[in-house]
Length: 164
Length: 299
Image 1: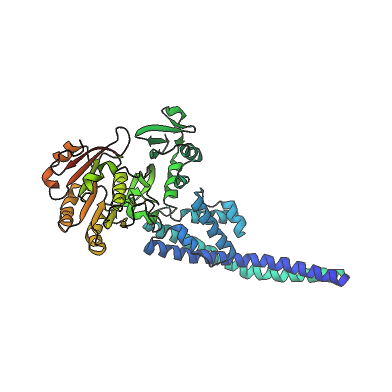
Image 2: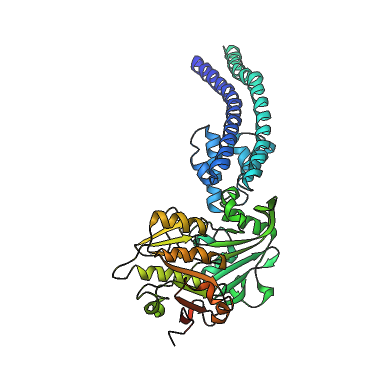
């Protein structure tokens, strides 16, 4: 019984550690997806003048958070919702800070809001922001991400040892 | 009406939904009450419907107008660059939205609009058989027809029905519609929203000159239909007519005297029939059908 309990504690602790670590990975994935999306939107706007709903409808790759953002934005455009995305909703979907959520919401809000030339400049601006955030997220993953996973395992082992 | 839902505040949409046929225009102006053109008369729009009292009217703010504009563009202003350069939007299905605001220019060329201050939403209507009273003068045999009225006089509605009536003839002609603003056919996703009959081809959202030149060459129509021609289109239309293609066109004007004042020589060799419309009682009412010498035929 004691051994089973210790195994449960070890698994739970490891799970928490790897979940926290996973959050850092998802953040990196989100900003990678946003950067790729920026490049795609720029070319769609410049060459095809594609409508935003069509660009979003064709976006079927990327992480779960990014795909959900695209889906929410597409629904918002179709229903005429204003603003398209709420900062706190983005923060909750993506697991980012409210400030970062506001930046991402602002990006989707800015899409399609002006003529093609202006759009290129606006999206380039957000590309710079997302690029910087990606670099920071990768740094966090390297330092804190790996550490979280290992910490989860060690804390679990420590508790197990104490129990035994 | 469904297509207007995203363009209007909820209270305005609900009030308009209760109106029947007859809604022609809705105007949104920043920080001003909503005005409506209904059966040829102007009203303010209140939560209870049409009113002449300004105080009970629904007003829209600058952000409401901006929001309506973005929704009309489906958040894709860049997709409507060509239309905005001409000061309008044609989102889908025949609705045409005139845009007021600050023009964004590159040199002397307007490329877009910003700081949108007003929108004029024109609601298309399809009135089947509205051209029937004039058909015997226009389609037996098929003549070159010019439909004339003032703004909002029902020219496009009449033209639409005239095209449809040609499809019911014993030997229906192929009709090519040069639909510059997508108002005649209301094409949405490749399908025309309005019934133009089974013998109609549309070239939408392209300049008339393109339709005149390549459309006539490639689609080999028997009839060419286009909306809102100007005097400078007449030489091209004369050439097309000389090639044996019949013409159905509309033009802004104020009656036979107005057309005559522009010089009947200019129209010679182009149009054989003139249909004048009036909105005295309702838009699209036929005021008279005239021949090429401006003699009234339907007196």
